[in-house]
Every structure is written in structure tokens, then in C-alpha cells.
Length: 191
Image (cartoon, rainbow, N blue to C red; front, side, top):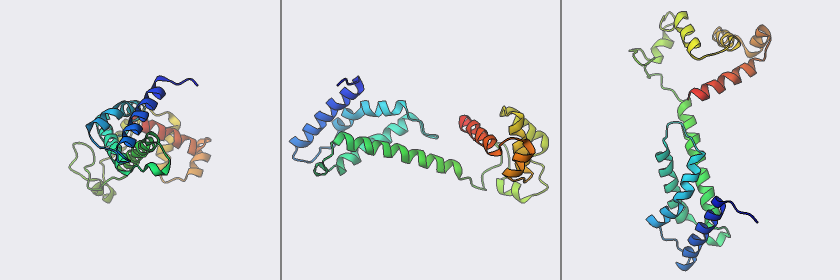
């Protein structure tokens, strides 16, 4: 069996932690040494993790907390190695952080100012049907800065006019769902 360096290192660390756990009669000592032992795993997980709104150190701190919680909740009688238990806890922590970040992106307050220098809130803009805050020229500038192709621009214009996805598909002779998906991918890149 050939092991990569990361796998071999993980097995060595896991063996050391398991041995410490057994020597202490089934109770894991939670201290800085425990965190230091798992720091390489934290760094490895950080290489492939990005959460909107959190920097690497925030995520690392959340993973350190997951290590402490895993050590507190680990039960050797379940027949699972601590390494496996901890890995699952760390993956779940990252999933939770991503879920919370996505929910935060989806929630907007109507009291939020409309634009950076605006004294108007989104609620005031939506309330005022005659509002000229978002005129055609401003809309065109936003579209041009987003580097959208003609189909994507037409899609947005038609959706703003209130057309359904089926109507847009007929009008553009292209799948509105495919165009919407492409727009969503561009938005993800901007975030």
C-alpha cells in the first residue's frame, strides 16, 4: 500500500492522538498541544476552502474550535478513530460556514442604502414608481461593466419587463434557463 505524505502524516498524528487518548483512560486532554497536533490538517483543509466573508484565519479559528468540540464529544466506544471523527466534524464545520455565508448573501435589508453614496434606501426606491435613481443610462453602464454578452443583456431586460422564462426562450430563440445559469456563474465570480 502506497501512502501519500499527507496520508502518512495524518496516520502518524492520528496514532499519536489515539495512543494519548488510550493512556488517559478514555478521556482526552484538551490543551494547546492537541490543537498544535492538528494544525497541519487545518492548513491542508484551508488550501481548498473559501468562504465568502471570512478570511483564512477566521476559518482556521472555527476549525480549531471544531477540534476542541470533537475532543469533548469523542466516544471511543463507538468504534471510530478520533481522526475519522475529527475529520467529519471539521467538514461539517466548513459546510456550516458556507451555508451561513450563502444565507447572509441572500438576505438583504430594505433599510440598506441604495448604492454607496445614496441617501435613499432600497425600500424608498421600490416604493417610488417614478424614481429615476435607476435610469436606462445607469442600467446600461452597469450592464457594460459586467461584461455580459447580448443574450444575457436581453435576458435581463426582458425579465425586468416582466416576461416569463418561457416567453424569453421564445423571444431569444435560446434557453432562458441556460442564459440565467450563465449569469449566475458570472455573479459567483464577482463575489
